[in-house]
Image 1 (cartoon, rainbow, N blue to C red):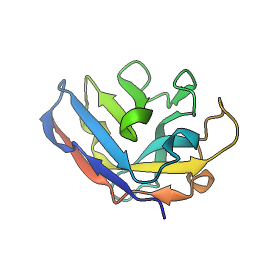
Image 2: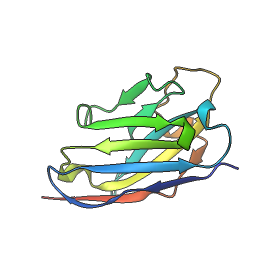
Image 3: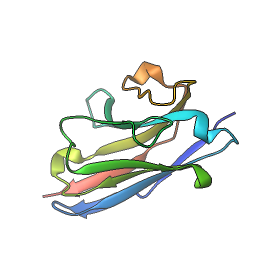
Length: 127
């Protein structure tokens, strides 16, 4: 069973930064593609960023491109989301997700593409 635990959320002023971490259990982290999603009140869960088994394969939604960076450390079984220049519209619960894949460079952007989910961490950006 895979467990994902997010951390690093909190309250920050607009223009500030946060780094989210997602620690994964299991010995096969390097064989998983990972994603960060967010869900604001009354809205559907949406992709923020994704990373393939290869750290060189990444995807960003248009709303965060240039401000957020996804990365992974296979030695620590951890994926990160560095969030800079935060705006109030970034306020949401942020979820980490994982799925196994044999494809080294594939990234996945759909909610239904992922098998495992963390419990979420709240990010609140004040204006």
